[in-house]
Length: 86
Image 1: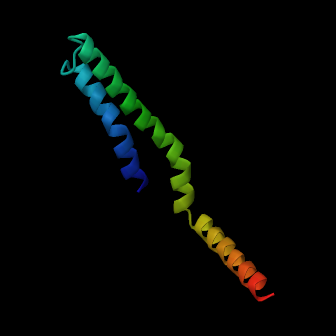
Image 2: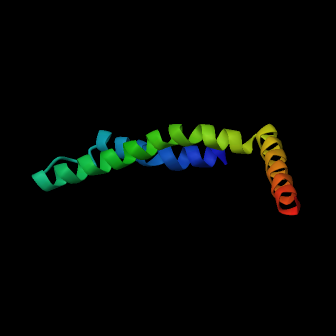
Image 3: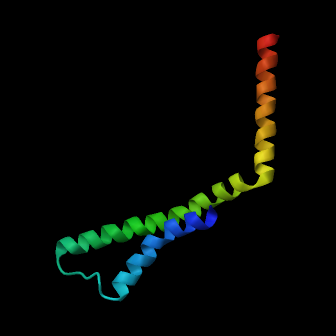
């Protein structure tokens, strides 16, 4: 899961850099310059989003996190049940 998300997030910017380095992408006109800048921005944003999502994924995949979350949910259910019964 973590490696798949890493690949999905970083592949576009690596592909963009590869195409730019080998001359497949070029700055021919004003429109193509704007398109390339927009593409770079989108690819870069996606790559940086990986850093924002990593802590969430690592905590969600952690067994300790899931056990604590389940315990917390059980406590909430018990409290609701006690309030309704009381």
